[in-house]
Length: 115
Length: 110
Image (cartoon, rainbow over all chains, first blue to last red; front, side, top):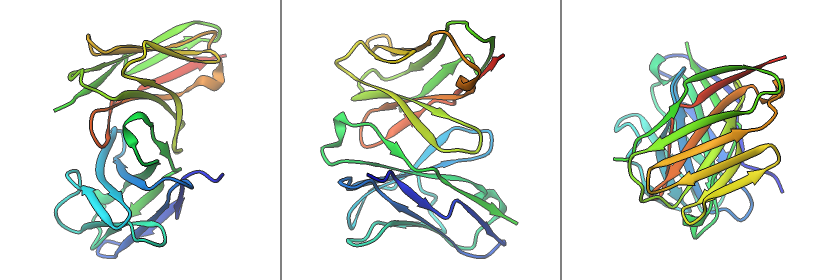
């Protein structure tokens, strides 16, 4: 049973380019969460999605960031027109339905470097 | 708004010592609390999950306790080893997502 899969592991983008980060949840998990970890800082919640629905995006910057979790395929975190301040580790976690009693399973993260 | 703090921020101990990491949270209305380990440049590994109705959980040399009413959890590591060196993160679940503490950076010296 594969864990949460994130790709790519490392991503380098020039300022102004777009970054696409992918997350495939564990089998049987239908809830996906994205977190960002800035250098020397803790993990901050960004967005919570279920299949085809954004449930909570209160932690997502209002501009340039978007997320989706289509019926088929992985969840995508998209960052348009990246800036140096977007350089961070982006982690995805998943959990099964009826989530309140469950913990998270995290992926290995995508480390985005903006040059 | 839930806030999670962890003390100490960093800890360095000789191999073999027993140690305690502390986690505090401001709102006791939580579903559960999870302890994670993060190695440098790596992802998060779940260590223990404690439900709000539980007082403690154990896994090998690790024991986590939860006192929900006082907003505290401790992670006890017995007979520490150099391989335990990592950052330990505490996270509480209140609604749809977890709120993380800043972590305790542990170094176990051989």
